[in-house]
Image (tube, rainbow, N blue to C red; front, side):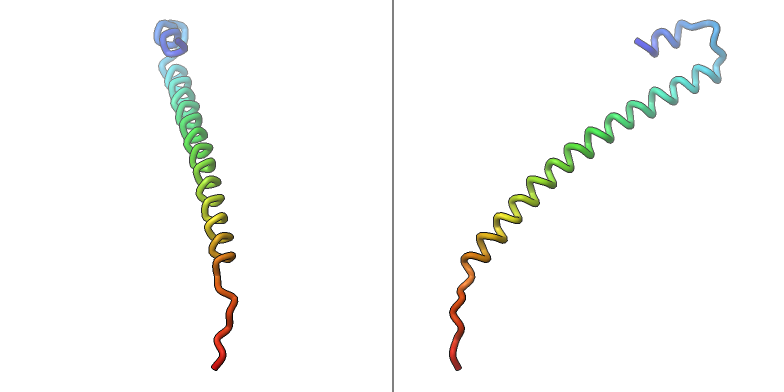
Length: 69
């Protein structure tokens, strides 16, 4: 909607329209990157939790017997 209004606006110079278009693009890229970082952090937390569980289970399963020589 903003881009349609910007296209139809006759009182703005071309450099002002370019500024607003650049800002719209930067906002869109920022929103996409924020979404990706949030998703990746959530996935990393799940992976770290799984690795922690595996490490705890492997520590429990380790034999504590010492071989006598």
